[in-house]
Image (cartoon, rainbow, N blue to C red; front, side, top):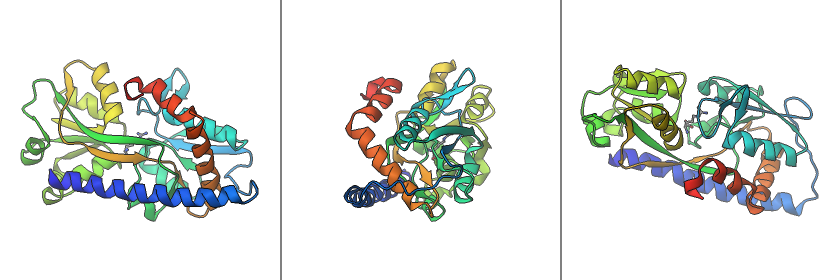
Length: 270
Ligand code: ARG
C-alpha cells in the first residue's frame, strides 16, 4: 500500500514541477508578440486522439464524442483558430501516434507519467484523476492490501496507469503480470467483473463511478487512492503548439470556461 501511494506521489510531484515549468514558458509567450508560429499535422486542424469509452472525459452520445476532454479540446481549438478533429483509437496507441506525428494531441484523461515524458511532452495539467478499485458488492476484497495479498485477478485497460501499477511486482505495489487481465476498453473489464471472470477492476475514479452507476452489484472501495494529473500529450518537437495550448488552457481556466466544463460533467466537485 505504501508503495502504491509512493508511486502516485512521484507522479504528482513530477506533474507539479511540469506545471511550474509550463507557467514559466507561458510568461515568455505572453511577453513575445502573439505570433501563431505553431504548425499542426493538417493545416487548420487540431487532430486529437482519444479512446472514447471513458466517461465523463470522453464517451459517445449517439455518433458524437462528448465529455470533458472533448469540450476542453474544442475550446482550445477555437482559441487557436483550428477545427477540432477527434479520432477514437486504442488507448495504448495514443502516445506513439503523437510521437510519430499522426495526431497533434493525445487528450484522453491521460496521466502525466515520467515514462510517457520520455516519448512526448505534456500541456499544463487541466484535471486530476484518482485510481480506484471496483469490486462486486459481495466481494471479500475490502481494501488495496487484501487485493495485493490475495490471489485475485485484476482487470485493467491496456496501457493505462492502472495497468502499469497493477502489473508491477508485489514489492513495488502491484499484483504482478500473472494476475492482471488487460482489456482494450475499461467497460470490457467491468463486464468481466460482473460475470465473475475477474475479481476487481483498477481504473480512474470518474469512469469507475459511471461504470458502477450503470451496472448492478458493483461498488468502489474506499481505500487509499492515487492522485494523478491529466494533461494533453503533445509531440516533443512541437514546442510552439505546446506553448499555444498552454496559453489557451490558462485563458480558459482564468475566464471560468474549463471549471465550467468540469462542473457540468462532475457537479459534486464544483
Ligand atoms: N489516466 C489513465 C492513464 O493515463 C487512464 C486513461 C484512460 N483514458 C481513456 N480515454 N480510455 O493511463
